Image: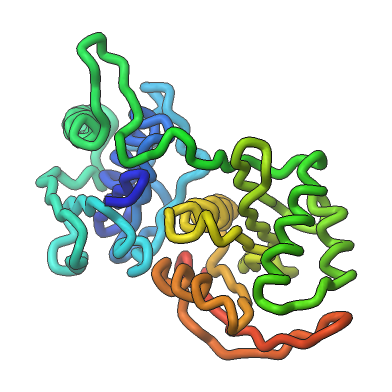
Length: 305
């Protein structure tokens, strides 16, 4: 199992049952479990009765939408929970598969949906109890798989600019790339050059970062400037940073996310491919002092409108 347990809820339309399970587990887990949901044939809108029942519990679904099942998400999950998608939901080696036999809430009124959500709530709590240790007083503690000294991931702040510049310079030097004044100019204005930037801080030192921005058509996001110091690779931190960017793109209803990474950065390529990105070609990027060949990737997040 990964450092932070990961759960993927699957149903056909990702509009009712898997939606409710995702929202409930996120609420109860409070960040201790990475939660996703998807559909084998995602619908175009959420089930209004399920949304209403969740709202009665004070749970907001404004940022949710039906998402297409992506192999990379499923292969990264420790637990895959299916609920009604049958043979259209494939099985993935290495993951624990659980099937919840639940009625389909499609077309049902809120009073008919409440018992279904109550059943999902009970199952979600039981699953969480298996993933997270609970003491007798009822409080929960992080699972042992999450180290207490793991770097914190948070949104970039202007005070991080110096540390971010040092991080990028160190990684570029590691792969033999010369400093690029254009990149440094971007980093000087990281809070305005990108739509979102996250940093991983280890006792005040920036050890990792990822940035993202929307393309002009606003249906595709471009992953930019993902860097991680060598000592923090292979420990799940890179995937955690990537997940922040993927979740941001999904929240902004992007259909796809694209990126380019230097051919020398093989560990980054393995990370992207494990997350479901597919190679689409290559290009040569010319900086102020050198040129580098990049491998281009694309990940479809949802079906085009």
